[in-house]
Image 1 (tube, rainbow, N blue to C red):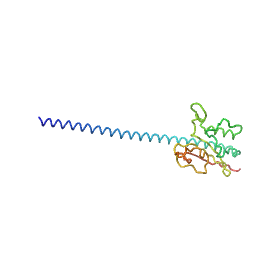
Image 2: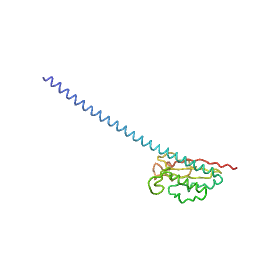
Image 3: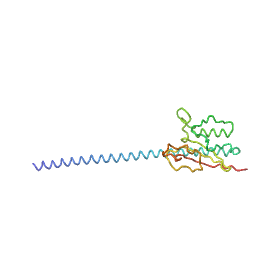
Image 4: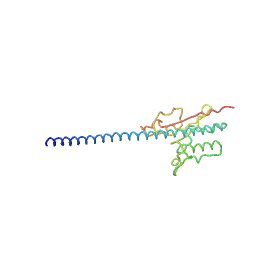
Length: 202
């Protein structure tokens, strides 16, 4: 009888140990799954940021090509399109509705200003900067005369810091820096695309 009681006692203790081991295995599994889900969430955030960066770049390239085509078509008045780097078109604080549209050049610049501010797609109410959604963040465009040719540049705000654009591309320079010591300092969040419109002398 005592032998049987000892045997039952051993079985009960073994089951308790087994039950405790199972709980530890369940807790370890939950922790592993939690870390996996956190990793997936981080990956999703990075993918969304990459998709938005790609969207902004594609919009900038479309707007760049748009103005380059306008200058090429109106080649006799190409010099009138020059804005320089100090007064870019489409900057967020600019009111595009105040621009004149009495000539082809002025109409082209006004339409480009609206496009750079994202007027092709709106949501909500308020100022243009608050409701326009159809372009890049903080988009602005510059047209410079470079040795008889014309360099068109579109600049905008990137989401994450990378290498700053070359010093020869000054459109929007120092307009996309964060506070001192921020990740976006030294123009690391300024994105630019450029093209040169060559005007042949006929």
